[in-house]
Length: 202
Image (cartoon, rainbow, N blue to C red; front, side, top):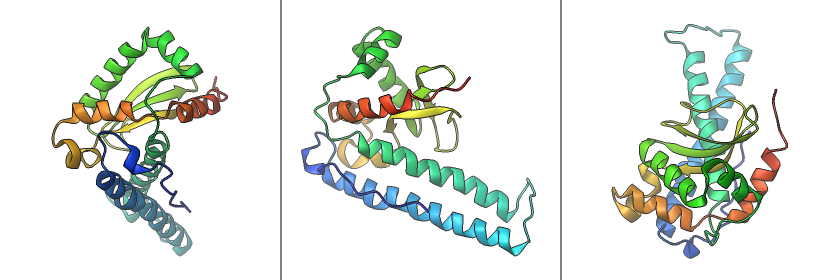
């Protein structure tokens, strides 16, 4: 069962992302993913126990639940990363910065590229540790269960659904993306990077 993680960042210190946006985003959207993940898990358990599992690929209760499961669970995990890395001073530091600069030549080039990816995505722009590539990679997804890469661990998950910014910047997503970078906690990002890069797949 998924557990709702408390918001550790003080929303009042964020620049360009309002407390109202954070409270709705965390308290309603993220909480909704946690609750729906648990509901789906319970329904899948009951369906298995019923002995009436039908695996029809056009439509079945099982198919609907399994599709909803990946959307909800990925929604939980990506939001947990998103909120965990906010609340910093936005100043890049740590070994992760060297890894970023090694791949993208400079932090400015990375920010420019990642921001463009955020403008191109409908759902999420993600910097991930790819356990097959054994390096950082940038991936996009239009929905939580579309575009994810097996074997990649999110390090920076930037939510670009409109609920992340519309109250604060209207349709100006670029202003929100700038604010996102301004509020990043690079100490937490470094912690996540160090944990992720321990894992490699051949």
